[in-house]
Length: 236
Image (cartoon, rainbow, N blue to C red; front, side, top):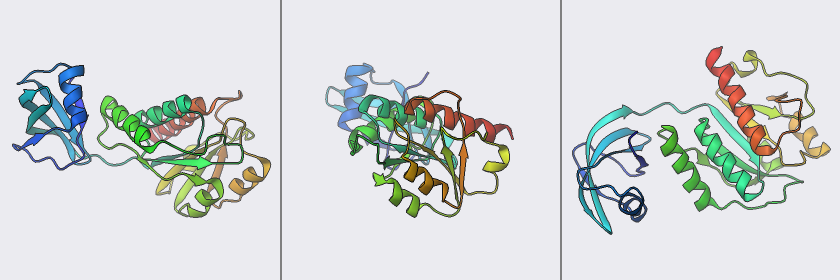
């Protein structure tokens, strides 16, 4: 399988580019590629087969040979997730990227112990997951917001899919129709408080649904909820 690397700058066929320090280190020290090696660079405009034309320890130059994949449509699925501890949060960022979400909204709720997100680290994780999962566009990570502010700012054309441990309703194909975007909301370890649940359920576009009879960890709940929405979207 070809190495894929995210290149945020413009790519033009038959032009050359000097690579960033991060990519240079990865190519020379991690993958130990040589001059003449072929790899792919991609961004939101597509993917290009490329060749290493100059390689030294701290300097790598590539030529973009030909476009092999056109730009793709963004998924209409977004994720709103309450912040949790570092390792499971990083797992959520990675898996949500692999499963195709377009935006990630980090949320602070009453029972959220973690109040901040390391954006540099988060961006690195979603870019690496994008490279590995054959996507072209990394999900956009929005600023951390309190639950109330997130709900106020939610667009009326967005259907809020609330993964609610108290719900007995299954998610149906009709719940996903006639809407511009879908936003899955997953609570913190320990769930939302009663007053927060009330606030969420007042939202005009909310659809509470169950994903399991068991109590799931937040990272498991995220994977289950996105997979369920993807399955319904793709097969109905």
